[in-house]
Image (cartoon, one colour):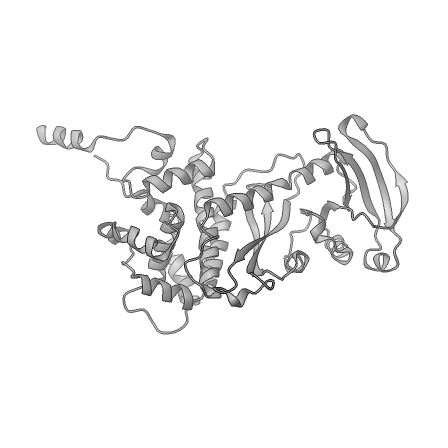
Length: 383
């Protein structure tokens, strides 16, 4: 009879232990551990993410009930005070670096986006995570609340967050976007929150394309017009240049302006891009696909535990956010590798209920019937 480890053990094998320990040595501060370890912290916090635990006490007690299986995970039992102290004091940059390692592995197995062009397609957006001002005074956002902001560049090849930056709530979207270095030839999709003409000119000089929406008060002059297929909802396809004094200095290059009316809602959109090669309808569909980054934030907030934090310091909050991102990549990697038709939501629900079941991981996801171990043992004894 084949022996299978728990599902959690098989999930954690996707994180090479030698790589983790190497990163842990690079991102260590303070005194050495006596019994606890960063690996024990990671296992405990990841199990909390996958099983949907909401508090530090709940996290520790749920794992303590499986104490007889912790040895096979290479993990030691952590008390509530020890886990809290590690989360507060040990650098969260370890899990930021681990996220980069896991992302590189996921990208080798991910499918491509559904468009015909070969350019990398990335949607930019940000989401604010509200915090209590009395509990998190270091993240003061407004007079009545605190907040941190999650900035994401979502790659449409695999719907994985290729660029992530966690800042305080006051950091503007465009400030975070300027810190990202995009691959040459990629297409960046963003809403009007990223409207900055100097940044558009910078992307243009770096051979990076952008697709965004025009501001209602933009001043411009039409240089050329192209025919459009009105049956596709298109109303115009123009080459323009900005005529505002400051705007023209910031972005002197010609820009493509496309008018589009959504056939489903009747709403009219004006898109701006520096890509003059793709069809006008393709530009409109590219912007429509930006909705995937909104769905990513919705999924993260509903399924990853980043709305209720188990620590109050900045490092504890950052640790929980980055471990949540790592858990997201683990689920995505399993989805790509198993090639099952289930969504990530369905996979997560299965893990929440069966995390310590001893089943073969991919057979479990396929829905193969469980082997009756008692019957097998009796048959072996008979023979």
